[in-house]
Image (cartoon, rainbow, N blue to C red):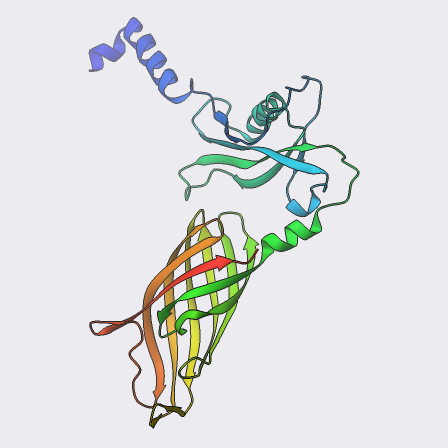
Length: 279
C-alpha cells in the first residue's frame, strides 16, 4: 500500500477517484410535481422568493413542487448555489415566484444535508393583497372524528368535533387541539380532551388528557349508575390530505364508578379514530 501511494501516477489516480466520489456530483434540484404548464421565462426574468405563505399575493397559483437536497461534500452545495439552481428550474417551469416550505441548513442531526423544498408559483399581480383566508384555513382546522376508546367513548353516529391549530417550525410542525363529543342516543355521555403534538411529513404523534362522563340514566327498565374517568392518550397517526388516522394506548388516571370497557383489548385500553377535515 505504501509503495502504491509513493508512485506518482497512483497518487494522481487516487486523487481523481476521491474527487469524483466526493466533489463531482452537483446538487439535485427537481420539479417533483407539475400541476400546470406555462411557457419558460427569459433568463433575465427574476423570481421572487417568499418565506411566509401570508406574504404570497392572492392573485397567484401553485404550478408545481420543487425539491432539492445535497451533502456538504458535494460541489456547489451551499445556499447561494442552491437558490441559484432553484431559480433556474422555476423559470424553466414558467414560474416567477417560490414559496419556501422547507429550508434546512447542514447540521450533525440531519447528516450534513442542505435541503430546500417549496411551491413553484405563477403570480399574475404582485401588487394584489395576500391571501389571508387561505393562510388562516391552513393554520386553523376543524375535524369530525369517528372512533372508539376511553378518550371519547364511541363516536360513530354522533362524531366528535375537533379544533386544531398548526404551527410550522424549522424541522417539523407542532399543533394543539381541543376535542369534544356529546351523545344522546340510547344513553347520554360527554367527552372532552386537550392535546399537543408534532408532525413530520405525513406522520404525527400527540398526547391528550381527556375526561369522559356518563351520568346516571335510565336504560330499559333500570338505571345505569354514573361513571367518570380521566385518561392520558398518546397516539401515533398518519395524515393524508383531509383524512387523519390515529391509534394508541390509553392510561386511566382516575376512575369513579363501575368500570366501562370501551376500546379494551386483552388487559389494555386503546383509542382508534379517523378524523376528516371539514376544511
